[in-house]
Image (cartoon, rainbow, N blue to C red; front, side):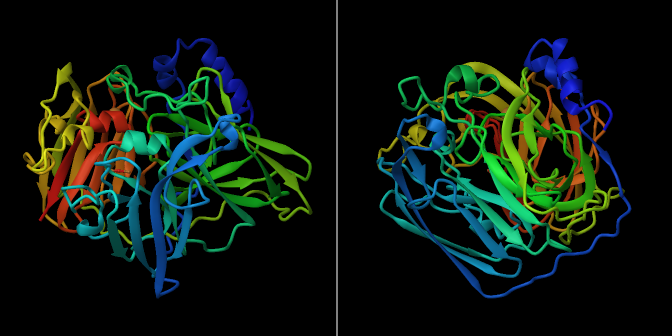
Length: 489
Ligand code: C2O
Ligand code: CU
């Protein structure tokens, strides 16, 4: 590397006028290498059942990043803030859950983000299942068809649920051709904490109508700038998750060489990492060549005006590798090939509505206000001019599109707003085909970051039949209108 990334970004930042300008700067983020590497398909490496028992409850917790405060987190299990569930490709996941959340009417369902599983296991209240009431139990059962770094979260009142920490990683193993020397799972999330150690409101109209209501404290795995010990001169796999409901980041290492080996769980020809942008819900698997013993590498977020240190890695022990860094690709999943020539084109416009429009509070049969459960009171955003909360979940409007299972489609995702939107589709992976603003490598992803005024085309082969959510993953945008669904028949 000639100029280091740090000098480069510092230079660019000197002329930037804040967030909007930082979008315009170093638009392209990585260079492709070994693009012709033949792909090896991941095959099942196990069978049998993996049991997972979740108990959603409030658990007062003093994470290191809380600076002495104890906060009423909501978590999936006792003793762990962010569970990391690991299973092997071919195993079936059998989940039982109890909703012990402490508030009346706090219904839940669990969405398995990025997993191509049957629609009735997708965990969207009213759309794919009845929500699970406080005190009630639920279950899920499916065999993940793909390897990769996935996660799960609830799908109702999610800004608060994410805000209180109700997020967990789900890792499906079986994609390594040769094992790395070590592996780390990093979950980046901010917290909204007042100076006196209380949660601040998770949603504000001001934030929801703009880029989202940001946290006040940054963390990776619940720690501000954690320091990890790693083997020296080794290849370390890092599964990096952006599980913040708001933050857009652009990660990179200050000095060391690293490669992107998977995006949203999808193995792909390694791309040497300069930096990579991740919006909420996006993941990237990196292979980092660590420095000699005693040296430190810093993982940075270059998106903010002043680059921020996310984590540090300290090398120790005998060197593991001596040759030059040649990132080993991962096995990839089987996907039906996209037939671009026959693909039907579908336009998806992401726009703002007239702000501040109050949504009529709707009541369900028992008189409970739906508005306090799944919907915000305002609509600020729309997809193809339709804002989701203008309709009851139980009484859906028209789908954004009706697709036929097995057919190819190209979506043109068009951002008509001055804000970025990470656009997510349930039960499918997009194949990113191109952008009008940036040179992007071709990759698969379940969430695609649309920059302000950007147009991105993505392809997909329609998967299992059902109703699949399609929404922005800045949760406040989702909950104030930027949400819809697609029907696959
Ligand atoms: Cu993680 Cu509907 O999404
Ligand atoms: Cu958005």
